[in-house]
Length: 214
Image (cartoon, rainbow, N blue to C red; front, side):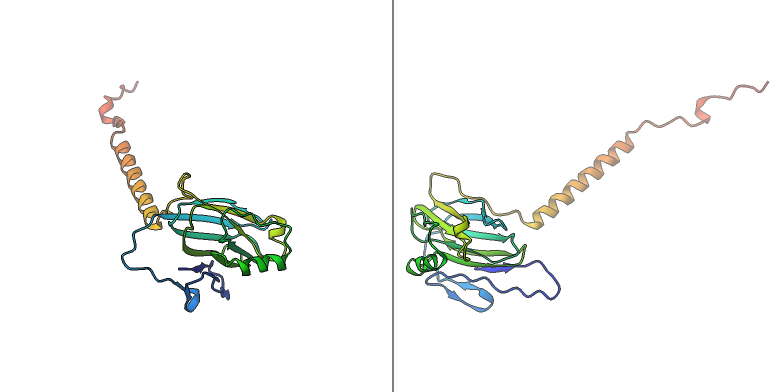
């Protein structure tokens, strides 16, 4: 499934992300539907987070997944101008940065990409996609906006079993708030205990009779 997560701003209408993957059907609002064979073995799951910056870089530029894993990708737009996240389907090939924009376009016409996400031009938008990690190898991802790849906007996704995957599922907000609540209760209990154990000051009556007046 692919969706755009856009910060709420008055009057802002976000276009849905574009995902070009052979064999997938694009439905309303950019939803991606894929048929999963019945009885298919369960695969491992990888969560990958990457940002597209205003200085023509992907951060990080080196990603890891396990071959055949179900990959949940989230790409954050940090620039106020358009980027793409285009993942090559050709293993172990570094696309020459000497290609001009027309030649780069033709390359991906000849070699259909695994992913071709349009990130838009709104800072803070997160574009997500789910795909199956390709066979073992190194796959280049680039920005196909004219001049961006030629300026060095590229990175590599390593599909391998010999390196750690790129990450785990992000913590649920519910878990976060429950943890805060538990910590607050613990602090309150400790404060009550500290107050009840505080030594009491003797009252004036318990301090003994006052000295006689002279």
